[in-house]
Structure formats: C-alpha cells, structure tokens
Length: 294
Image 1 (cartoon, rainbow, N blue to C red):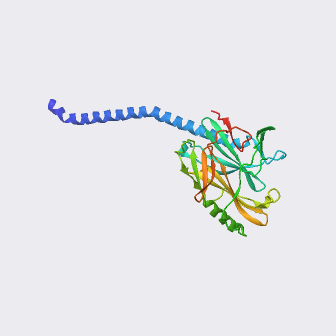
Image 2 (cartoon, one colour):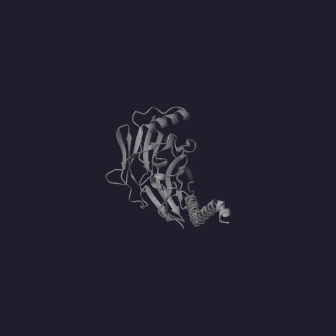
Image 3 (cartoon, one colour):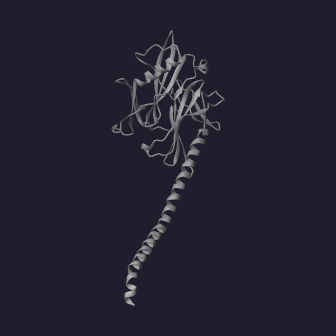
C-alpha cells in the first residue's frame, strides 16, 4: 500500500507550492489595493485643487478695473500675452502675463501666479506718464505717482526703416543688443542668472489707433527676457519722432520682485534692487494678493 502511493508525493508538493504562491500573490494584491486607492484619491484631490486654482486665476482678471487716467470712464481690457509653468520654482500651475493696451500701446502688465495660499497679481506700469488708475467698486487700489518706465535713446541705432516689416527686424536686432540678469533676492547676488530673450515680441504696437493718444509715437514692440519661459524683465522699444528726426528709444520694466540689471553690450544701463514695498498704491510696481479658497 505504501509503495502504491509513493509516486504521488512530488505532484502533491508541487501543487501545494503553487497554491501557497498563489495565496501569497493574492495577499500582496489585497495589501496593494488600499495603497493604490489612497494614491488615486491623492491624485484626484491634487487635480481638483489645480482646477480650482486655474479657475481662480482666470476669474481674477476681473478683480479690478484699470483705467488710462482718473477721468476715464471705460476701463481697459486685459489680454493674456503669454502662459508658462516655472518648475524651477516648484510650481505646477500655469501662470500668465496680462497686458492692458491703451490706443495701441501697452500701458501696464501683471504677472498672475499662486504663491503659498495666495493668488497674486504682480502689476507694473509701462506708462510714460503717471496717469494710470486701478479701481474696484469705485475704490482706488492703485494710482502711481510716477511714470512706470524711463526711456533713453538707443545709441548707435539705425534710422527707422520705412516699412513695418523692416522696422520689426530692426527692433529685434536692437533688443538682441541687450542682456539682462536676475540678480535675485540675496544681498550678495549669489544667485545671479542671465535671462533669455524671447525671439518674438509679446506685443507689436497698433499705431493706427495710437496717433491721437500718442502723437510722437511711430512704432514699437514689447519684448520679454525669461527664466525658462517665465518673464522677469520687459523691454519696450519705440520709434519716437522728436523734432525732425525719428529715433529709437528703449525702457525696461520689472516683472518680478527680485533684483535685476541690464546691459547694452558691456555697459550697465539699468539696475533695480529687490522690491520690498509691494503694497504701496502710489508706486508704479505693486502686488495684489487674495487668499485661495480650499
């Protein structure tokens, strides 16, 4: 009897091992299910929060009305000039840059981004005058007491060309003569980073609508210097008719609270410190903040 059952023992052991392995695999699978479900819930919560942040950012363009001057009754219409994600600063939301244009010329810009638990509008004047006003419900939020930009002649620049196409090529070449550096938020400037000029302007002036408001203006374009794709410096290049001779002029504006500098070839032509007075409504650079909803 014993001899008759001997050949069956290896098959029984093999079957037992298979059943044991199958049981272990099922146990492991069962253990993974809660972890996977938790990961899925976390991903869903993150996606939901990102959607809410995006919706808040898009609706925030209506936080306030920007007017070209205190007497104006029709607010300027904000337009999105560019969008980007700055992963180097740990953000995965798509930030964007708003422009306000008055009769063909940009007069203000705002970087819109979430920071900590706030939504921020970092707003800067691009105006040659001190006339801009931002209001909400009749209350003044911002009224710069000085021009937002200071223009200078571009040295050794060519005479403005006759055609629109050639003038755009000239403006691109003039912009390429400048280099800008984000010197950062530390006093020792140990985080200096040379910024990249975007090859195309963010906005090309619409001179047809600018003649009455800006009588000396003949042409212009707004360029951006970026960290990755995040604009940190704005450069305005304009053709101005002063007297009998039209000429090219330039001006820089900050699009960050960090310290910045710009050079024309090897000469330092613009330098601004880290910006700390971010809530003064009389300053041409201001930051509006509102808490993000959970």
